[in-house]
Amino acid sequence: ELELISSGEKWGRGPAHDVHSSLEAQVDSPSWHLVQALNTLVEKDGHTPAVDGFFEKAKPLTAAQQQMVRDHAAKTAEGTVKKVLGVQHWVHDASWVDSLMLLESKPTINIEGLVGGYTGPGGKTVLPHKAVAKIDMRLVPDMTAADTLGKLKAHLARRGFADIEVNMSGGYDPTQTDPGSTLIQAQIATYRKLGLDPQLWPRTAGSWPGYVFTDAPLKLPAGHFGLGHGTGAHAPDEYYLIESSNSKVQGLDGAVASFVEYLYALA
Image 1 (cartoon, rainbow, N blue to C red):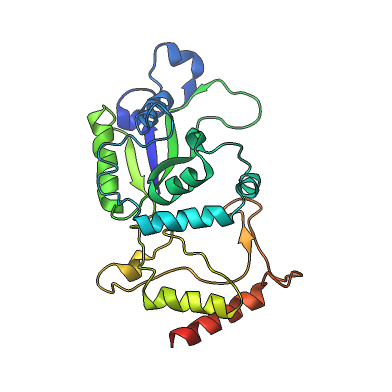
Image 2 (image 1 turned 30 degrees about the vertical axis):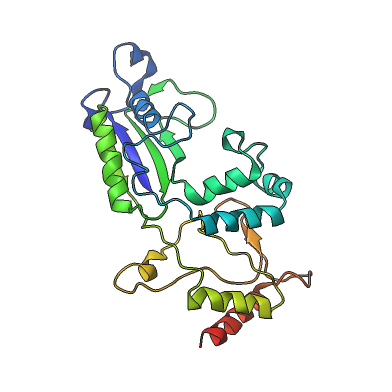
């Protein structure tokens, strides 16, 4: 995650403080400067990352990983997923399977939020001296946060946006684990013992600091595990089920107990 900041002070153009919007006729706008910089980060489709060298280290899915995606797609109702997400189409009108392949294999550049000037009720004729874009870049193996950050800064500088401040606020390297590892096999065995038929997933599009375990010096397998149910990640209505009235879905007690079974399987 990072912030891109365009300001009159840093740019050397535009106002050093908010001024009346009528002055747009004779004063440069840091807000439009940021919009122009953001526009260079993606292709004309408004989606595909266009940062120079962005995909150089991205590792494609193996044939086995692609089959995991196909198996998942066959067992998961596309309509239900669209309803939960509130979407009608996948990007580029991709098929269900192709959209999942993209989810599992393609790094992304996303605008989390845009902040600048007056955003309250009604209008306010102001030319802001600063505008901020909050960005997240989802990486895939074998990309690294440091290398990608350097490429972003170089990309902006080459296009006349060296003044745009790039402040990394958090993040880490991507990771994946061999499904044949003892850890993952113990997870599969535990799920089956508890009456479930688990589906292996090549990677998770969400972020987590698994690299702490999988990278040097530890170089250990790592993966997600647990029963229970929750959804709506990072949304106002995000939830996790505490008590379940459905015998097929565990609440918090069942989720905790599943980790006990898992640890016994590993021991």
